[in-house]
Length: 201
Image (cartoon, rainbow, N blue to C red):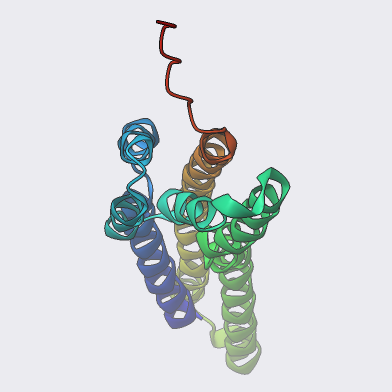
């Protein structure tokens, strides 16, 4: 079982590293990004605004692009498009987190199973040796069995801590998505400013 635990720890480490890098790329300065898009839209340069969205990674630029593409369909249509896009983005952010949570939950059980199997082997050896069983052999077998429990806990604790940290990063990105969705909805739905009327002669 110790090899199963080692393999699960390698998977947990790989998932954590991959998600951490992904969230680092996805979490941008939303306020600065939206200000840039707003300034471009004020000049009615839709192509440049879409190019900015395409050049910036993460779910926030994709939501902004969705709003821009649907700007001519009315406020409610833009809102629905943003909700649909958000429903696709959130599962992408949460991808593989369940695997990390599962490893955190089952690693102690794998360690316990390894210990139980080890104790079974120890008592089988005692039964076979009978009165000739040596205390050193018993203590060595028990020590090896307990290693599995310690290994399972050593994998579970950092995996659970890593899972909670990544969930916090996801919640931060989702909060940015909700805020930016509301702001870009107001931007693309607001009527264009009318030029000031000339003074009567």
